[in-house]
Length: 459
Image (cartoon, helix red, strand yellow):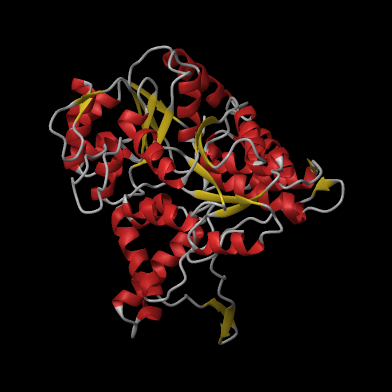
């Protein structure tokens, strides 16, 4: 259930956006102005802010950055007020929502900040058994560790567990532990008091407190720094947390779900993950198979995504042609469900006619190296062995080779940072630091799936 904060008067057209969001399952909060909105975000957090352009969107975005509050802002206004829309986007708003709002646009925005609230789409026997086990353990309050390759749908399963639990009326809060640097991650988790660090202009609740009475998902917990692992362990054991700069602990009532693409047992053996925290998190373990291991789910998921993105883009719903289905089933899907979703989104936009044909299925994959042509020596055909790959690198600087390898791997993974770091054998933090250096040097970096390219204006 996405948490939406609306800044502006609900008596005008912005109220229609609020009603649509609530009808789509969002949890709504409202504030009359940007200062009151900041106070709301400090106390309760949100997944998305809709702000009327009559308010100072630029100040709001700057204040969020100063206070390290990671929450996207969408400016809202009449479509004929082009200047206000441009000012808001240039000030840092992620998007512009024309008023009066269209239901499909609201649905697309909610989908961008929260997984599909419906029951997971499963048909393969491997997944139906897993889903039944997930629903069985959902009724308890035990911690659950969800594992699986990147893109398999770990957060979708976590949301389903929350929806089937006794805490379903509470808030579901997800935090990607690999997406934030350590200093910011600690503040996001535990909150802080005024003056705890530079920029802490007011007290703010962290994700643990925001999820009070509900569920907190710690996604990619395998990337977490050992010092923070110790704090997470204490929070689980004692059911209390310490805000940064706080004088006394704060009691919390939260169910913990954790997700990772890593083998935490192996990470424990290598000394990279705390054994005591691993046992606390893995009371119940659920492993999501890779999409290639559950081929019975490929077509049901493909049809689901085709319907979803047709509605989101205002296009007619089309079925899949037999040729398109054969292409989808034959593909290995290294990016799992996320890659399938992106593929069907493109297919919906590219398709023509009454069905989605094979020509609209644009699979992003690298071509295999060409087979060398045989040549004749003394009339005897002999295949020429290709030169060792390293030979082509002679004369190049190590940092250039490393940069090209990282960028190509990231492109192969469709911009998925976690998957690329896994393939490269480096931590997500190392990858993030490298990409920051490349951007600073003017190198084009593949964007995160679902986000505009770095420096681009969302529209």
